[in-house]
Length: 424
Image 1 (cartoon, one colour):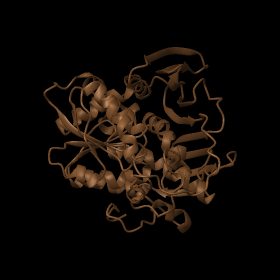
Image 2: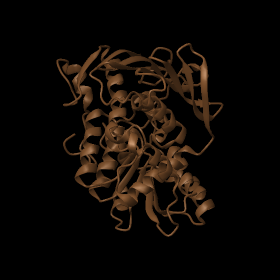
Image 3: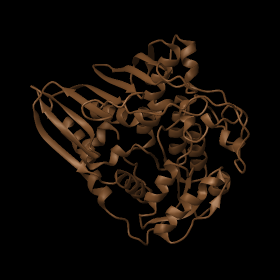
Image 4: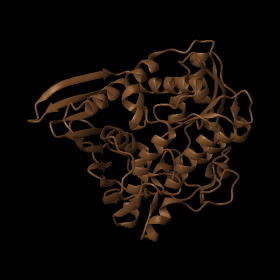
């Protein structure tokens, strides 16, 4: 959400997400990628009366039954299974797609959907690399499509209220924010390459990424930890916290990124960092990000959270005992306000906002431009980790100058494939 229209639309945004679309106003949709997160999305959507399932799409047929059964429990029928994304997008009745594929497919699928005239809800991170994110924005604008990123906090009432308090001057001038992702992740061990599972279209799963042999430690969920497909836990989860922190500070794109990001404690097949300590500079404001995915200890009573520091106090935003909310502290550190949203199904607020945008053609709370800017922090932090150097970034041109080794990570090398984005 752009700063210039944030405040006037803040209260309206909350009420808009509460307003139900009439049951007759059906939105024909398909979910692309239906294991894990995709199944969770489909299950939640099935509870919404305006959601009409046209298809469930996945290159692995073994994941279809469980997702289809979850939808049928609420809708009374199992959506058709379609293996090929292109056949889904060819359906003229289709209004929108929900993309929950591995990261390396987020941009290709989104761009193809925009070109086909479909609106898009795409899971975070927006892209696998920074250049792809800009291409997603360009595709959305060129084809006049609604594209919403799955950063659900943008539609959560308690988080919106916390941002409103920051903007109102409740803690004085907000100068710095800290975001943290310090949850315990699994040690995945080491595995040898193995045959492709029966029925899996592994060539399409690989898509435009470099072709590698099949390996269980680079497949279901574990692809997050391999650079060819994922963006590490910075993109997997940290983007949520960095998005809130950036939103609270009212900043867009950093001009300098410094710190460290390394794999230190996991002795396994993961390539991506298990530890990060980064600082993003935005002129007179700064955003810090800490990640520790090898311990269960948390910070400020949360495994993942955000603290916003001002001249007159601070606000903590996050989840305590599974209840979303925020806490305000005065200049002396005393708690002066404690509000909770309870255990509301946050993604339903976000899905409703997307449906409202599809109907109104107004940009959603987590428009792809906003999503690209937040995802950019993940990419730039990963570049600091992969090069071992601090970087200077040009926000206007979205380039790294004077460091060719770092700059090459802004893009990727693609293999020849029908999904490869043009201009990438």
